[in-house]
Length: 474
Ligand code: GLN
Image (cartoon, rainbow, N blue to C red; front, side, top):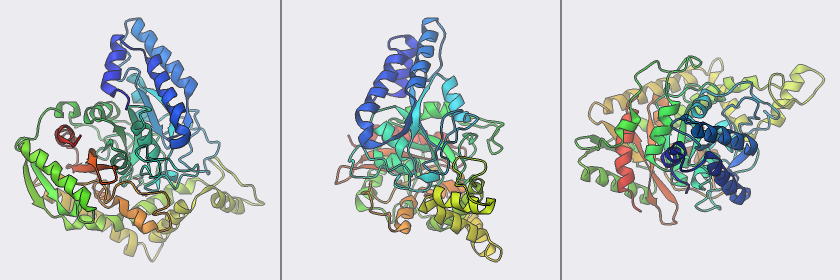
């Protein structure tokens, strides 16, 4: 494990360590192990070293480089950096270099952080294991025979392997929280609209949110404080009302009503249920009131998500036609070129989603599938909001199982989709959620517990998360 974001930044700012040495250590760690783990699709060795020199020069000159001074950060490869190839884990973007940089990256860099490279992911963020990457999977540092989770698997590996103290991912149905749980990290999906999606390649625009992977809850709060906030370039970005995440860290949970939610537990392995119950006890010992609660509507999340997300994806991915981006497979006419390009460029899971989504949106089926799924989404949101009249937060499992083996679920998409059973409902509601590591299972693989809060109450997650982190099994 590397030093925390907080430690690195404060030491670089005070001149007791250099950004250059920090970046060197990070690059060395990547060189030593990433052939095996494959977290990165691209490492910007020269760019990171050059940025470190600039940060160190600022400190030397008596200027403050910012709250993330010299902190190396890994970026999921669906986040655009101007002039740097962005693949989304797909062959279809081959050779494409974005003409602009994502707002989150601009903000990190303005705060003194140093992007070190782009991480592996399931193609277009569709998947739960990184096995859908066109460039081969990433491996879980806790046991390289196991998947790291997905779709932001490479980002999780980059932090869990100790290459970097923070990585950004995107979470549409669980793609930050699930790999965080599998790799023993803190993973945070902010309230929809809290983090600008400008420069994030769209998968399912009404669900996508960017967030961090870190080793500690405090680091997640600090990074999120930097990347959250209104952005005029994203029309879904919220204007104001961002809660104070750092201030929430030492608030404690005395008097807080925590709903231990059976519908975020049923279906999980026994060892995971046991950890969530132990987490509830930690909170109770710290003064929280634990209330058993059922929200059966949450069980409908998976089926609604697997209509809505593919429907939006089928529309978002229509732009990859061989004309405007990346790959083109030449043919005698445009229509044949479109087909040949998409046939060669997209992997099996992306094709499956495009077909599912197109079908769900087609005339005659729209009401029965897409319309019904939208109604279900509303039902889930209403049920969550109703629950929050009697509890302040919800507690449950992040995932039904710990990290699984390569190939275990590839042949059966339904079993892969089930990985997201507990993470999907918050995306549908636009609510925030945090996964915090809480010990390991029988095989030594990490277990995550999940905290859910009402929309725009992300501070509650950090309030509870800090207490859980303190009380987690060693
Ligand atoms: N695993 C889910 C899916 O395949 C979620 C992906 C995500 O959050 N990007 O769609």
